[in-house]
Image 1: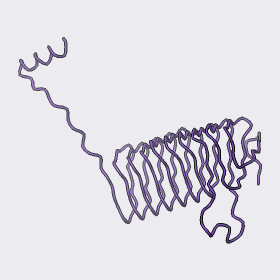
Image 2: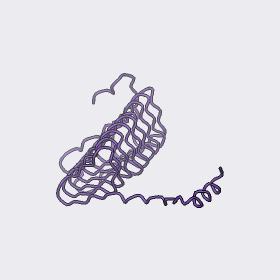
Image 3: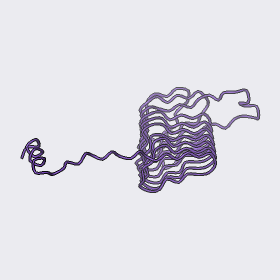
Image 4: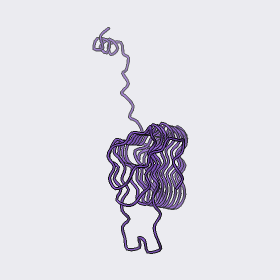
Length: 226
């Protein structure tokens, strides 16, 4: 029976047609002091705190996840719009999905196998480690090491910025960032280094243009020791 005839038949028979139920708004959590725990396989809106970490159980979903003094620790299969902190690291388990950016100032960022970030991944003072993950934006840091691990792909390239401020180099020679592009990894966009780095690229890796550094190729499981 055609849809219009079916509706007419049901109305004529006295059968009420239920209107579609509106979905309830997602729950936001906003704190000043204290951590936040997002339960496994539950959906949330914004998760925000100032002094505390944020933990997301496996399969949790949220929009923007933000803290100032604390880390962000996500299990497997977590889906977010974005995540940021100032003093803390960001860690994702396997198959993470981030529609926007991952950002921290003082802390590292690590992504496990199968994770995808559609925006950029950036730190100031912290390392970045990717394991079989895809970054559609750019990977950026100032002082941190970067490891584009085996099977990873960075579409937007890599930028290591020159440190800013008068204190740079005041207490001796600064640490030289170590950039490793691992086996079967791909960096499609340009790699731009505004400061001295040590750049190691596996023989099986594919990279685009390089500005500001010399490429050291290696063929073993691990790059040469500094």
